[in-house]
Image 1 (cartoon, rainbow, N blue to C red):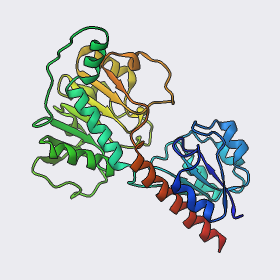
Image 2: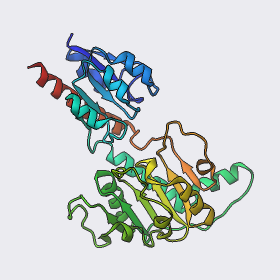
Image 3: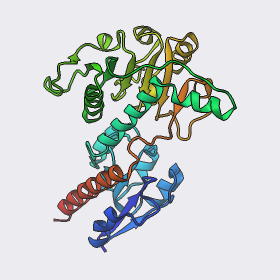
Length: 312
């Protein structure tokens, strides 16, 4: 037996996923303290001693959890985000952090496009109205010719932008770090943050949280959008100031706010999430068969690479 590996992503912790087999084949015992659910702090503290590796999801990880990780050498995320992890503490403890970069990009970009199109055509409120016996018919907009703002041009944001360009949209993208040639298309403009927002009929967020934790979309930013804009957030709940988004929805400045991300999961009820023009999905951006498979295989490869290095 090589040791123990903690498995906590909800998509994997019921066991049996074939992409986990290489860990078992290598002689590791797989520990799944909360099958199919998000583990609590107590679950993690109880399970971590003796684990040299951790295949981690989006569950919150506190300093107390890391303090209990007496044998941990590596945390391997089955995605790219690490906002849930105390990164500085991991570095101080010499615990390596690996990410499955790019593996869920297609899935998240497709969900963002789905939410954008649903907003442009008012799909969810129309469906809800018909369920109540009404016959709502709100004039929609086409994405062809629409002005689409994209904040963040990493693998997900660039994928979303390219899908919109393929459908005939005019895309204005902001990213201070992405290579200048990330997207080359006649209808694509690389621009400043404010320019990406200005006149956007669709705005999609694909950025990490700013280092100071402040939201990107506040009242001033939302006022730059085209009236009735569709705002899509498959990135992080904290990028949007909730109170300002609620005001923008009530004023009609934002026509639809579609979000796949929340401050806590499941989220607390709020006036924003109850709003009739808010569309919600349960953090399913990367939750496709193909994406889970790609992400898990990469995360497993990363775990084995680190642990085998330590073994020699």
